[in-house]
Image 1 (cartoon, helix red, strand yellow):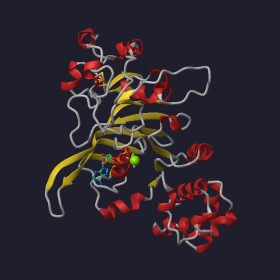
Image 2: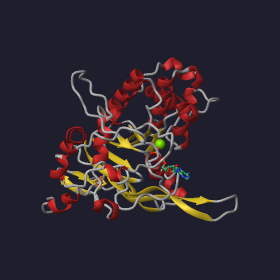
Image 3: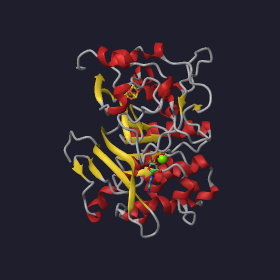
Image 4: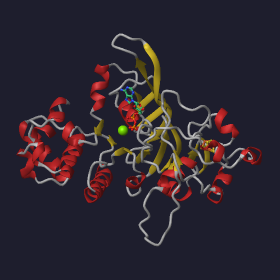
Length: 378
Ligand SMILES: Nc1ncnc2c1ncn2[C@@H]1O[C@H](COP(=O)(O)OP(=O)(O)O)[C@@H](O)[C@H]1O
Ligand code: SF4
Ligand SMILES: [Mg+2]
């Protein structure tokens, strides 16, 4: 492994699921679940991947873990390319990247005691030299995730949801992983338990120097955990920056809409809710140009025909929007306040009509922005 290499590097990763008709039917199209995603993650770093349901977050996690094969692109683990490795050559590397899913109950074998659940990965990877060493390691894992050692003789159903998630985390740690992918790992938990598990992950990360890829549909959860945030929309990253920048100087209109739904702790502070019209469009036929153009309050002509690429907007912050950074900073003043009424709903809710938005005629004509663009960013 190259010492300076990031623990994880993803290059132009894509996953298109073929759509088939009938049992023996050929492919009739494809679902663009993931479409050219690139980022890197350092040791001891947390990168959160956020976005509405269906935008490709889980597919990203599964493709990195090779639980599903990528259509194209590359995945590098600690400087070694792994997306093209045979199953046999990949197997020992799996020890280093583990996953914690949303529902620990379905991912923990109900017929196994916790001791055996935690011992299994160590036995599989040949990490325990003796039974006594195994017991020692299981006891240490129980301590690390805050579970009483006496509980290692119990079955998963004897634990609460939060405790089961602690078992899931301990199982991910068992083989000595450097990278843990948490896919909605706290989403199903009660608010107070959620906070405890988030704190546990933060503590473990600091103590063990873990890298976390924290996948969540809820931007509020990541605020106290993450170093950087990648915002996904319809299979693509639309903005990526450090946490502080995201929560104070988000650039992309979609990120701003997501942020507007995050509760503010100060009861006197007001955050204007940006209501987006319609649902996320189908990834079978993603919209032309900017994929967000069918819902964006700032859409203008260029957005419908030209795809905005991720480009730097300062300090490691990248965003894929045709609006300029300078102009975008001013967009709060331009926010339209007329998007109530039929078809309008907040992020995260569902449109019962299932209709796609037709906000285009109702948005301000911002074509002038195209001419107002200053030179390229530094
Ligand atoms: N195995 C599959 N076959 C076909 N389509 C899939 C499959 N898995 C996911 N998808 C589709 O890919 C898109 C992204 O899904 P997913 O990655 O689960 O999103 P998220 O985790 O952000 O909610 C969705 O439209 C989903 O229906
Ligand atoms: S490129 Fe256009 S449609 Fe896309 S987010 Fe920017 S302003 Fe909105
Ligand atoms: Mg998911």
